Image 1 (cartoon, rainbow, N blue to C red):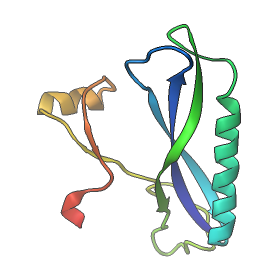
Image 2: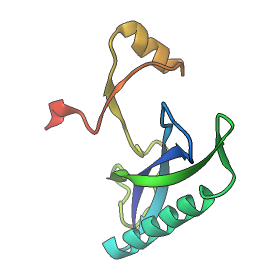
Image 3: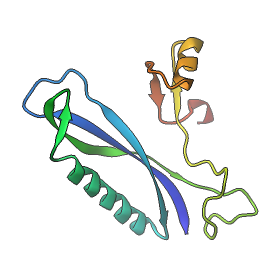
Image 4: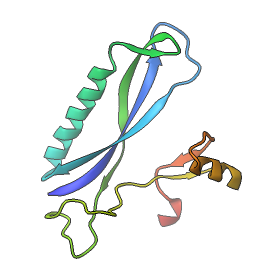
Amino acid sequence: MTWCVVSFITVIEVLNDEQTEFPVQEDFYLFEFQSDGELEEKIEKQINIINAAGVDGVRYYGKNAKEYFLGVRKIKTIFNEPPLDMDEDPPADGTELTHSYMTVKSLKDARRLAEGKAVYVHYIDDDPLNE
C-alpha cells in the first residue's frame, strides 16, 4: 500500500451580497491506496463531502455563504526511511507528510509567522531552487 497526503483548497463565497475578501482554507488528508484509480475515488469522495457540508448554514460576517472545493493543490507521496518499505509499512514516527514553501518581506515577518501570527506571504508550490 502507498500512502500520500492530499491538499484540498476550499473557499467561502458570500451569497447575494458584495464580498471584499475570500477566505481560502487548505486542508491536508492522509490516504492509503493501491492504485491511482483508488486514490482518485478517495479524492472524489472527499470533494463530495466538502461540497455537501458547505451548502447550508455557512455564514461569513453574518452573511449567508457557501463553502466549496476549488482544487487539489498538491499530492505528496509519503516515503519511509529505510529499513521500512513504503508499500508494506504504514508511515512511521518522524515521517515527513508534506511541506510548504513561501517567502515573506522580512525576518521579522518570518518570526511572526513562526509564532502563528498573520503576515503576508508569497506562497510558492515548491522550492524553486530544487528545480
